Image (tube, rainbow, N blue to C red; front, side, top):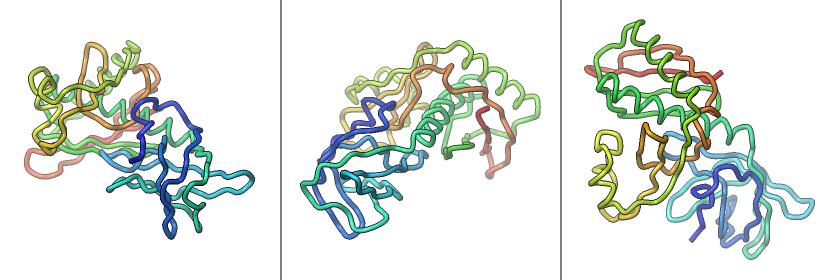
Length: 234
């Protein structure tokens, strides 16, 4: 079973690990800091090194294990490797994912608009929410309020919580714990101090000041009672 080290420390971009399984073009490591695609966050990219030999990590997927897809025949099981993440891509995803949490909490508290979907990229993001159409004044208000929260440089922390405790204490409209399989009894919680707590397995910055300036770039209707909000970070 791969140890998911990105859940503990999102800032690590180089690490050593051992190949547990080698397939045609994939490897399973005993530990990894590569984030596998999920929760609206794309997978990390980077390289695997063994001495002077290098493989490009073209994708990372989580199924029964975390599979690191490589650009050619992988190193053999038992090999000690060094993993190196694309630092800029990882940092962009951390900023955008934390910004998405901030905006999702803001949209719920100020517009009674729960998030129903999201997608992050390295240069933009979008959030789908359940609400009627936003006006231009709404977009300006959302952007201004989000940047106030960025300026607060609120600490961001992540920790585990028993599911029963989470169900008792967290806002069900933010966490949507009902969508998680009943077999999941321990949750990873991401908390923006004094503003938001929700279950999440993604990577995040350590305070909102690291997000950068939020710029709302537009909106579109996604059907009856659903809006898509697009934004970038400057």
